[in-house]
Amino acid sequence: MEKVYKLLKNVGGTNIAFGVVLIVVGVAIGVINIVSGAKLLRNRRNILF
Image 1 (tube, helix red, strand yellow):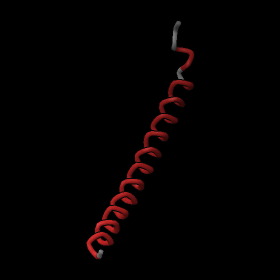
Image 2 (cartoon, helix red, strand yellow; image 1 turned 60 degrees about the vertical axis):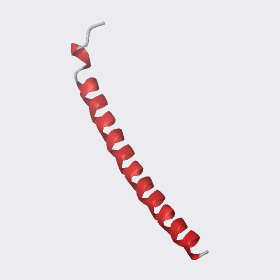
Image 3 (tube, helix red, strand yellow; image 1 turned 90 degrees about the horizontal axis):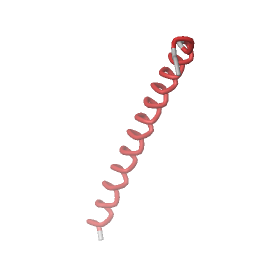
């Protein structure tokens, strides 16, 4: 029974660490998208359709 608790503790810690990494990556991608959109809006006069 102790093996199961150790396994669950390790898996839980891994899931929390993975979740934090995903949040950080998501925020970074969001910031990059906002910056790219701002650049497009700033130069919208140069875009021809």
